[in-house]
Image (tube, rainbow over all chains, first blue to last red; front, side, top):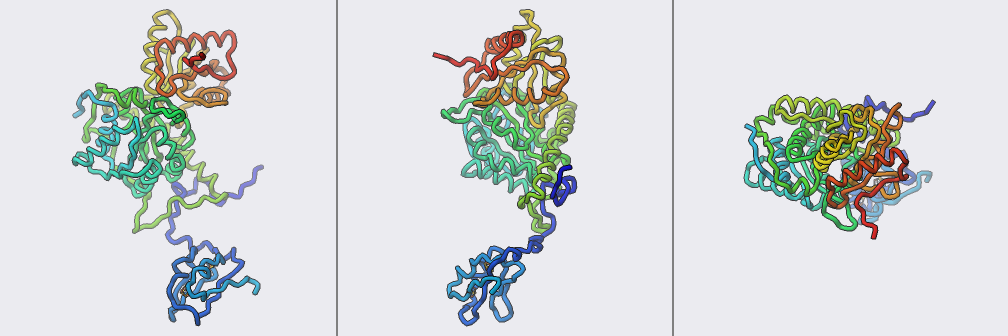
Amino acid sequence: MSTSNAIIGWKNLSLGCAILEPGSSRKLKTGDWRSQHPVLDKEKCIKCAICYIDCPDLAYTQNEEGYFIADMTYCKGCGICANECPKDAITMKMEEE
Amino acid sequence: MAKRVGMEVSLGVSEAVKVADVDVIAAYPITPQTHIVEHLAELVANGELDAEFIPVESEHSAMSSCVGSSATGARTYTATSSQGLALMHEILYIVPALRLPVVMTVANRALSGPINIWNDHSDIMSERDIGWIQTFAENGQEAFDLSVHAFRVAEDHSVLLPVIVNLDGFTLTHVVEPFEILDKAEVAKYLPPYKPLQRLDPEHPITMGAVGIPEVYTEAKKQYEDALVRSKSVVIQAWKEFGDLFGRYYHPVETYKTEGAETLLLTMGSVSETAMTAIDRMREAGKKVGLVRFRLWRPFPFEEFFEAVKGVKTLAVMDRAMSPGGPCGPVAAEVRAALYDQPTRPKVFSFVAGLGGRDVQVSDFEEIVSRAEKYAEKGAPATYDLIGVREI
Ligand code: SF4
Ligand code: SF4
C-alpha cells in the first residue's frame, strides 16, 4: 500500500486551493524555527518603527509606552530588525543564552 | 439579428469578444495576433465595448493582469502568439490552478529560431500540459463561434477553467472570409453574465495562490485535472446548445468522408480545409481515404477519437510542430499513446509539414497518404517524415 502524508483529500479541497478563512496566517507559528531572538535596549530606542515595518513576519506590536516588542510566537530570528535598527537598539541572542 | 459579413478573421474574433461583453482585456500586440487586440482597443476607445483595456508591457504582464482581473470576478480576455505565448508560460499554469475562466485566442505561429512570424503549431504544442481547455478553429466562422463558446464553457460552475481558442496565424487571422456575426442580444441568450463562485472581495477576504506544500500539492493538481477531464461533457453540451440556437454544430472530433475508409489523415486547424480537397481528389481516384480532425485538443477526446478511427487500417498524422530527438510529432505521439491499449488499432505514421509558414498543398496530403499506405505494408522509419524538406 502506498503511503500518503496528504493533509486533505482533493475532493475536500476548496476551489483552486483558495484559503477561505481571513487572517489564517496567524495560525502559522513561525517562531518554531527560531535559533536567535532580538533583545531590545530601551535606552537606545527612539521608537522610529523601522523594526515594526521591516519584520517579515509582522512579529512586532507597539506597547503602551510606545516601544515595539516582538512576539516570540512569530519571530523566526532572522535578525532583520537588529540589522536595520538605526540606533543599534536590538541585539540578537542565541536561544540557549 | 445575426448578419452576414465579409471581414478579416482577426476582426471577427474581436467582434466575438465584443458580443461576449468582456469586462477586461489585458494584451500585448504580437504578429499575427495584432489585429485582434488592435481592433478591441478601437472598440473600447470608441465606446462600442464597455471594458477596461490594459495595455501592458509584455505578455508575461498580460497574463498576470488577466489572473488578477479574473480573480476579482471580471470576464477577462487576452490574445497572443508564438514568443508571446512562450513568455506567458509560467503564468499559464497558474490560471487553471486558481480556477480562473480566462479566455485567450492564440494566433498560432512558429517559435524562433530562426525568427519566423509565420504559421505552424509549435507555440501551442509547447503548452500542452498547462491545464487549459484547448480548441482549434478551421475557418473564420469557427473562430467566431468557438470564441463565444469558450466563455460559456470556461465560466460554467462545474468547469471554471481557462480556455484557449487556436487559430492559424495569417492563413486564418489575416484572410477576409464571409461569415455570420451574432449580435449581443443573441449571444446573451447563450452566454449568461459571469457569476464567480468565489472572488477577491475586500468585504469577504480570501487568499488565492497560496503556497502548496508537499502535503497538499498533489491534491491541488488532482482537483483541477479532474475538472479538466470532466469539462468535456460541458464542452459538448455547450456546442449542442450553440447549434440548437444558431444552427452550426461542432464536435470534439470532426470527420470527413470516413465511411468505408481504410486510411485516414489526421489534421488540426486550417490545413484541414486543404486536406478535404485532397480527400475529395483521392476519393474520386477510387482511394478509400477520409479525414479526421481534432477540434478539441484538451481535454483529449478519447472516446470520440476511438469511434472516428474504428476499423481503420492506417492513420497518417500530420503535425505542424517538431519534437526534435523525440519519437514523432507531438500529436502523433499522443495519438499513439491513446491507441496503445486498444484491442484493435490502426497503424499510426507521423508526418511533419507546414513548419514556419511553409505552404501545405493538396499534393502534400496525397504524398502523405501514399507514403503511409506504403509504410503500412512494408514497414516505416522509426521516427517521422519531414514533408517537403529540401536535401540539397
Ligand atoms: S528600529 Fe530600533 S530604534 Fe527604531 S523602533 Fe525599532 S528598536 Fe527602536
Ligand atoms: S528577528 Fe526577524 S522575525 Fe524576529 S522580530 Fe526581528 S525581524 Fe522579526
